[in-house]
Length: 441
Image 1: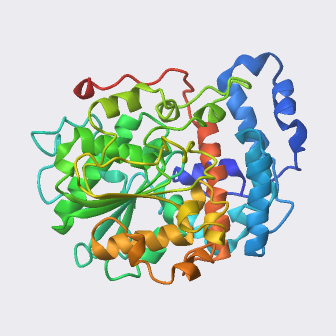
Image 2: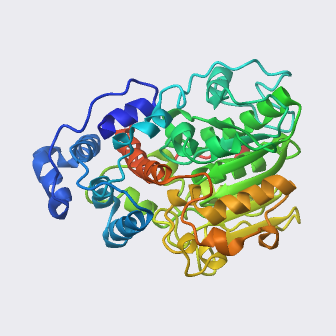
């Protein structure tokens, strides 16, 4: 299946055929695409489309067969790549192409990634606003409800509900299918479901936050239980916005577990939206620049500090979110309200070990110590404590969490190419951040 077809599948269209074209040499990938555009090189939509075609033309030249090979290949791709336009084809060439592994194609199914799910109606009125303290939703209720994917394993309150909230450019099904969705469903203390955000969270992050606020109120109503929410990447920002401006969510949420969060944005946003070649950008990526109005507004209203008990888990070698070390790591949330916050850097927890060396942005989803800390938080109903994690040495010695496989690693790393494919396919391209909504001014 070509990457354009993965983008289509992620938006609930049909799956299609294999890569049709030969490999493009990486050393002149950008130059060849731009030079081939001629006069259209100034048209951002055509530039983005041309690069999507270039990614589509890439075929794997290797197969990942061992964990050491996977680590070596990722190190080679992410330490030598100067920009993401070079990195994505290199990642596919290196063998991180989940379409070559039949056993994991299911995670890319339209059903698991649908934005038009048919869910039971809420048990109480939560629209047009969930509470008098909340602003009214600007999105139709059918859109908010349709994004909530309730799998067949869901028990509707027999087990504690856990909402899985995705990040930028990839639906919840693809994000969590190989990791948390599958493993948590087997546990007696977690009942996972996930969200598939329209436009894969590339549109205005304020709209994506409405999905978070609605889902919390809806699932709490449906199950008669408070929820736990596990967020990935931008999903952490979306939730923090929801907790800040939709206060009805706070008493309904037991805790947050944030994976690869970017509360302070990322300096690498400029690499996703380069000025040459001019790809334009998408609304939510612009909102994740550290100096964005979105982040400034969030922090001006207290969003730099937790509203609910929070566990934050990040990696120093995150290729998307930086900085994650130093005096102001993006993934660290403060605790001025004394609700309970723990912030973990996997390289500090597992120094010089497989779980604490190269851990990519998406790699946190299969990382063994990140999963162990998540389970600790879920079991105890409060922020993870490293002192409670048993067999730490054994966990740090593993690249992937117990119950996950090499195929899960390949599929999860392959989702980085899905992100970039969706980013390139997004229209309309823009260079202007969305205006802050009136309730937050």
